[in-house]
Length: 498
Image (cartoon, rainbow, N blue to C red):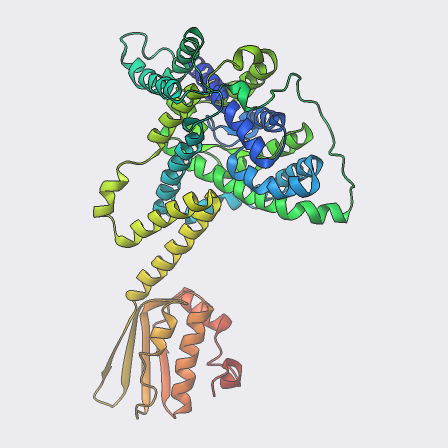
């Protein structure tokens, strides 16, 4: 027990505290922006980020991963807020958490093993592009800002972020993004730079969140209103969280608990809904900031949530002075660090199908700004390409022996994709007295494959040909005994062969 606490909480105190502070600063503008996207006050996103980060630090399945209000979730809330208001959003957030806990007990997080590396790579690259695109508005003409000043501050921030770590002795003590934010803010104030600040993003809350029960009718009509939104939020939230966990696992060379993360996300969203926050999930950008800033344990996630609230409530007067350009520099650093630049070279060496999956995932995510759509299309494409590839290795070889018996040898995997090609390989009309079908080098995977061999055998028998099926392995034998009809009464009627 003590070893676990030390490993997951106290093994990297200085690095976790500093990294958590950097993440908290990066969370503020995003939480406000996501609130605006969803159509609610900034405090809804800020309270959500605080609640979710703090709760997930204790109940999540992955140390050092940051969870808070996210853009992918906010996009799904727009219609609900517009048509029914904030109270229904809070109720939907609570129900989202309940659904995610159920998903956790069903171990649906393990479905991530069906996501190919090409989809993950496309997801990462698309996210990097979206992170960069989300900063573009701050680099465009804005009321009260001078673009020359803005670009200068962003360039200064990037210079500090990438240059500070090379300073001897002190370069590794404090995370460079934190140094960048402090110095850029100080210089902007000193020289009176004309640039938007956090204060321009919206009114910050000045009180701690309080427990509340959503003020809605507790009846079936309410459930029918919020359930479609909650199920969508639950799925998208877990999908983004599982993808984030995969990336953080790779960055830290450790393994997270997907099932526990599903349950933890659910608990965090329930708490968020009861404390006036919207539903959220893991954030890839902030998680990468955390790890790259030196955060490796649960303490960094807890510090991010607590420091966020302390800054917003008690240090808002100072916080409002931070120029958005300083935070844009941090997010550009995250975008550059997130993108897999080696994927350009891999386009020449990887199979065409893998490249198509990766590029399609990127295109769909960037076009829709919905990470779930991109992953879904990528997984479907991967499955189709895989099925097509396996189908090619199925073959049927034939010869006639001295006694006039026709022999067919089936090689490969027989399933829904290859079943039709297998049936077309048999010459049903050939005038022979006996046919031997050897499947010792084949495997029957599904009912489509069983139906295909049934159809071949029944059609041969209809032509007056004796058929012998040999070489079934144990698994295929079980499938055919359970679902096959060729050896049962009224076989042609059951199969529908006429």
